[in-house]
Image (cartoon, rainbow, N blue to C red):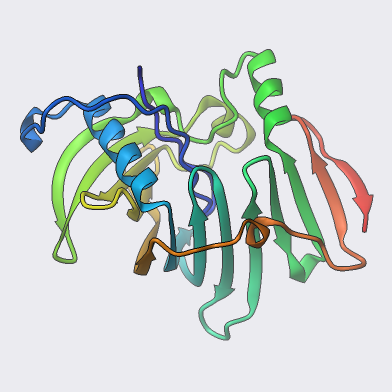
Length: 242
């Protein structure tokens, strides 16, 4: 059974796993991409849930911006993220998914994007895109094991999906992901353009594992007056108010 590791946009990192039994331990240089993805899946399932802080650095037109935040994740597909401006701590957004519905709330604009993940995936497949993911899952390749801040990490690389590049040609071309060898948790992601220039990075720290996180933490109700964009396909959204 093949295992694929899917990475979602803007600090939204979800794991979609198909778990297969592992063969006896292999040396790092002997590992295949599927060996590593299967190992990561087993480690992440065993970890169950975690909380982390992170920084996001982006660069565009020579201007570098930094955001900070915190996140919660619960196996197998629930995630919560709060993103703030570094300079003043102002809330920039919330990205919350219960595995079925994903919300992207932007308070400064009083709007929220509501993604029906199942419907979007189906629509993408029907329109021939194959996947609604932002990373071309088939492109993932295991690079090796490196040291990051004194910790051993698996390094994988992949390219952006055709769907993502169709909607925004300026999106990153390549993504490099660093994942903890001991727990299967992402430690860092770095994005590059088609010429190999770094466009941005996310770094995760202060990771707390095996927490008891309630499912209700991954539900979201927009504040009154929020304009809601219903995202049920890969085309234009439907607009409603709350």
